[in-house]
Image (cartoon, rainbow, N blue to C red):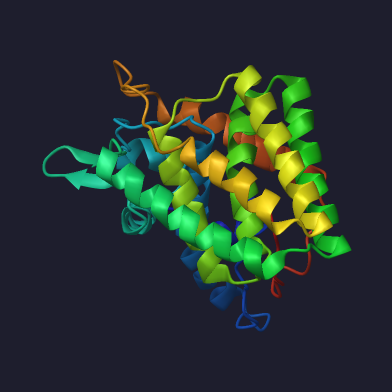
Length: 284
């Protein structure tokens, strides 16, 4: 079905969610040009919401991503959804099966090993370039930890799962390199597919490790920071024995609803939206 993005309330959500992306000044207060540009952005929004749902363990291996159901969930056309799925396929997070459709694949042992090796190389490099953390970056890390703590107190395990994975994306953002950040986002989504959803007990342990990592980075203790980070990466190396594989595909609308509600809540607590024809860079 068609979708008029210029008048859609989801436009604001698109803007709030698309971190690490600069919207150019190409709109020039031209509504037709703006509408066309937002149609270009909407598939990226769908891609990002789907990524977030994977990192929150709401979408798991074996899930069929029906174009029709996704179109219904987002109020988008099938063509827009298909473009988003192609983007996710480029990240290695979905596969198309002939005559069956799009699926989130199981992560094989070789894929898990390759993901962990890539994380080790990239993240140790990040530490070497960012330690010691300057005060403003350290404060940003503490704010991320505070959001994790709030999710723990709320018992919101899905959002907490996302935040624990997103912490590594935050580390990548320290270098202000959008390509690196997007690569890390893909790697963390892959890691999420390889692991079961953490329990609240597990999450508290991981949160404590992250807290120690931020303090080590702030203090300039590179050896300790590296040890803490490598310990966390190694924990993702051993795949669990089929932790996912639901007996029937989840209802996509139901699976995506917590993420969309969270985005709406975050938008409500954020600053007012800027001029719709001139969009500066925003972050999650």
